Amino acid sequence: MIITTTGSIEGRTISAYMGVVGGEAVMGSNFIRDFFARVTDTLGGRYQKEIRNARAHALADMKEEAADIGADAIVGISVDVEVIGDSMLMVTVSGTAVKLT
Image (cartoon, rainbow, N blue to C red):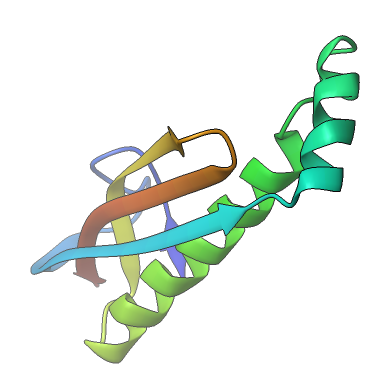
């Protein structure tokens, strides 16, 4: 499935807009992992792995939702990352499911 932040796909024609699809992932950090994340923060690496993981889960959920309604692609995707408290990370993604010709 093609996923893009743009509103179109080069060389393809959108034949139908099937609606907004999305995915969410909430990840928690335990005390030990959070402690080491703070240590690596001084080196610029805090939460990068957790954000990548959460984004991958959210994108997979969005793809599944689009596939369930028969979409060929998702255009105009948006990714949002929020920190909840000191130890929770939420990633949400959304986009428009489309049919291609």
